[in-house]
Image 1 (tube, rainbow, N blue to C red):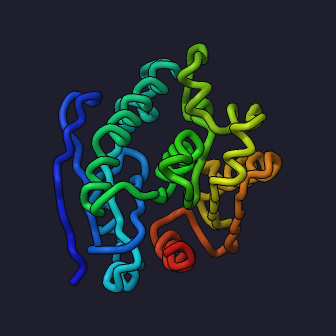
Image 2: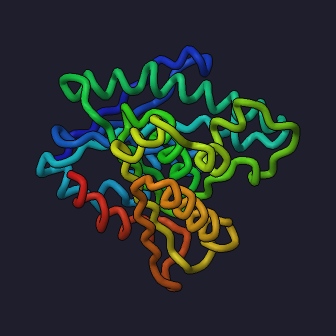
Length: 248
């Protein structure tokens, strides 16, 4: 039986704590971001854990499903874009300062961690990897949108909004840092062409994000599925089961 561990991880930057659910006993660790306003158990409840259970049972992978902070950041359209971006930075401090040390302790020491997520979780998976490829050298995004300025936003953009928007900062990457990212980071962006992939903006956003990364020479695989593949959990179960075994 796959090990399942439910823990409350302190979150000083968020004013309390957040839940992390770990699945698996051994293998490559992956940090799993939920879809918009999601909770850590959503991945399990929607069949995603079962979709890759053989990898968990065989000790090839471990999943660490985390809480979202979207209601105080990107999903809060009552506050301006810059404030929403600062809310995301608070979330980043929780992930880096509390969740990642828990993952390392659970894995018996520091090691590289992959990121993955669906829908808004795909944005988190990518932006964490781009900003901290030293910690997260692999990102898998399923049906993501990657431009926070397009998410019912208003207000002036400052540094926080810029540095949390990969569609804005990736085109300006250069020099030694870009060379390092090219040698360090691998990205897989997966998208269907069925219902809701276009109306949510995921299809054009994923194509554009893949082009931006490829234009900079950063390893990015764009995997487009067919017109019968909608923006929904059954699609993501199939896509995760297809891609995750390649990396563990």
